[in-house]
Image (cartoon, rainbow, N blue to C red; front, side, top):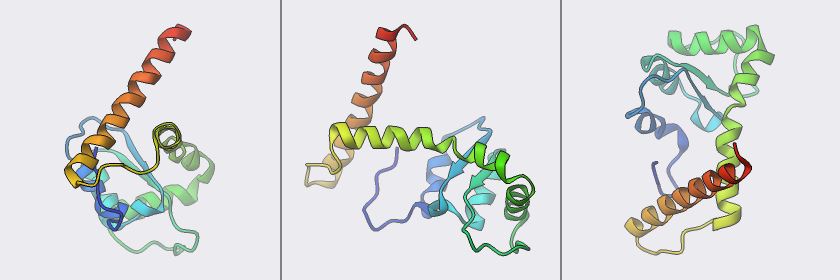
Amino acid sequence: MEVTTGTVGDTTQLGTLLENLDDIESVSGDTGYLSHRNCMLVEAKGATPYLKPRRHSPEQPIGPPAWKRMIHSYRRNRRRWMKQYHTRSMAETAFSAIKRTLGHRPTSTRRDHQKLELMTRVIVYNITVLIKSRQRGV
């Protein structure tokens, strides 16, 4: 988990998020993660990037091979590509639930305490989901 200030864009964080991951098949991200560099980082991990292209992306993609492959895959079979891309909605659902149930903003003022608070919220959410799934017998 990476906690940043509100002024840091998503696109610069993907490399850090991928560092400790092994054996991944794909990475899905919205246009905030879209960049040539991120496509190359994902492929370097042996995974397929599903970083949503912007509406006005050029028909003939210009850039590194990883970028071109992703754009061509998107254009060739958009429906299948979007189905894979939408796996990210599971993460978005979890973020939304955490914000709804545990609050949108950290209450701590110190940066190190904010990070601990946010990490604790994620742990509390995960424990809650685990307990509920056990109660349902899943």
